[in-house]
Length: 212
Image 1 (spheres, one colour):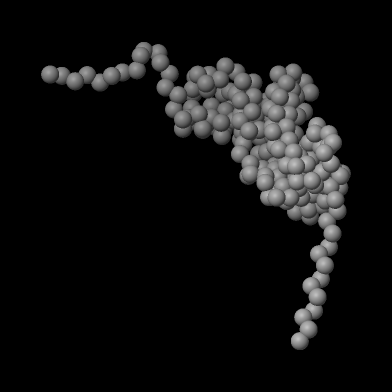
Image 2 (image 1 turned 30 degrees about the vertical axis):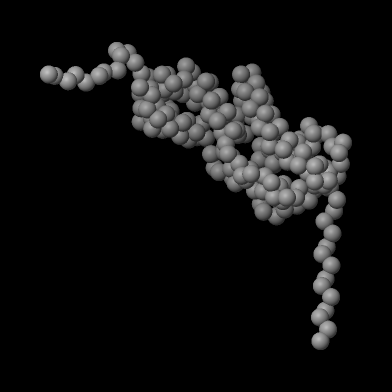
């Protein structure tokens, strides 16, 4: 009795995970190096060490490739923002976002894509959709918990609050092009908390001296 090995159907594409990962990594590196306008599938393939066919099996164009990567990056995992206080949640969020934005690839790619979005309706629509959804998800939970704890007024306007929370970081990275230092983030926590209407942090009373 002979045993025959099963073969994949003729023409079937086997999409290996390690190749997909290599392509995504190469895209990020190439996008940071040359920007979206000069990005080419050929260059991404060379950097990834794969054929152009391997890319086109997964994505139909460089636009589809970039949009998927942007959407995946926007939905990256963040730490659970539930420290028990508004200021603690803000500090943790700002630290996590700053850590991601300090990465050289992110600091080069994000401003380029924001500029490209002004010229490309597809990129603009995707950025608006994924970033808005992510902001609503993260900022909405943060603000809602602060209202439930009594740290923010019950009539806090959610959209305006979320804009106040996320806006300064994007402005500093994409427009001002200034570093996100720890001192800046600390001051930002207090400024945003005050802007949202949170009570000021009162200094702790000194403990009474122990009489002998």
